[in-house]
Amino acid sequence: MIASRTRGTYLTLEKYLELERDSKIKHEYIEGQAVAMAGATRAHGVIVDNLTALFVTHLRGSGCISHSGDVKVRMPEIGMFYYPDQSVTCAEEKGSAGRDFILHPKLIVEVLSKSTAEFDRNAKFEDYKTIPELEEYVLVHQKKVLVERFSRRADGFWAAQKYETGDRVEFASINLAFPIEYLYENVENL
Image (tube, rainbow, N blue to C red; front, side, top):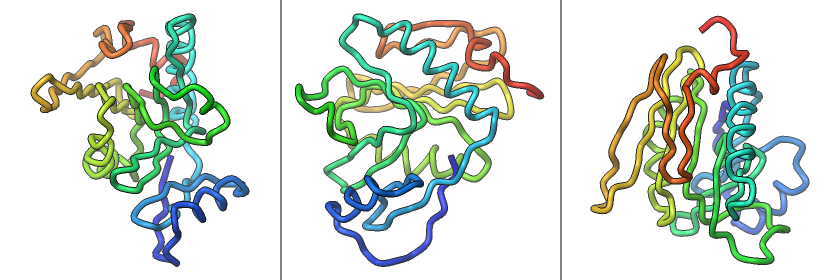
């Protein structure tokens, strides 16, 4: 997804949530601003769909839930909301199903686009690091077969791992491994 950031009126958290519930387009909440999300490419959508299929099948019966890009992640310590392309949570509170965001993702995946790659890799990753339960952050390239996985180590630092053509991608946080080609199935012109 592509974010369009314009300076406007400061919104309280409550006002943002109210406006977002009624909006026909999605907005992330960054430093008191509602940032509109633009559409994605077909390749982006296919990769997210492939991830959804892998996650839903793997997580069935585990107590963990996969969320697509329509569910916000809230970072209360810094007052931000993002719509990751995919997330997995295993520790949401009972009775929170009616809420329109999650607080405790253990895995977050972003599919990179030209306009968001730098933000996803840097500022957004730094913001996601404020989530204590987050174990893995994954960047999936859509223009080439490449997945970058960052996993939180016991000492709090993040270890990087790259996967390319022929590799098996591993998401240790949910105990899932699969050939990288599964992510790029039906994505043309890579």
